[in-house]
Amino acid sequence: MTTVADAYSRRAGEYVDLFGSMAAVHPSDRQLVETWADGVVGQVLDAGCGPGHWTGHLVRRGHDARGIDLVPAFVERARSAYPDVPFAVGSIDRMDEPDASLGGILSWYSTIHHAPDGIGVPLAEFARTLRPGGSLLLGYFESESTVDRFEHAVAPAYRWPATALRALLGDHGFDVVEQHRRTGHGYRPHGAVVARLRDG
Image 1 (cartoon, helix red, strand yellow):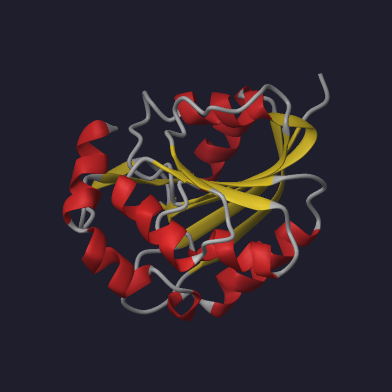
Image 2 (spheres, rainbow, N blue to C red; image 1 turned 90 degrees about the vertical axis):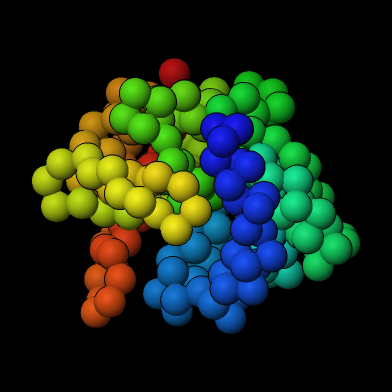
């Protein structure tokens, strides 16, 4: 993912201006994430936190949350904007977290650049670091029937059918408990799944 991180680093300022605040968040996404987080018991990790607006928002709502991101410019911005919130440079492919230590993981579009033969790496890390019964909220671009590579503004990305993503999560020890789809004129369909890590 080094190439992807470099691409985001080159456009970090532009990304922050466009998407780096809660004002840019769709109201239904905000409601979904807030409702999910309110049901998490334990620490929440914003895995691929970007400029940190979601992490900061969750902390302001009283959650024990912190963020990691592979792009140093994003982490620097997050620390500046939310000085009381812990942020670190880190990869979702190799998370510096103890086994079974987290209550919840927010992966909000942080896996969109993982190809089908690589997305299992972060999913395995999510399963390793969540405690049994822990919850994952994963946001993604949705496809109707097949995994679809497309030219994202920053780096190539992938759209996933909900059924394929659900099967992958099942293979990594998760049970999907909610699926969401958001569509509208002029943008790609957005999907989100809430999944719970099975005991054992």
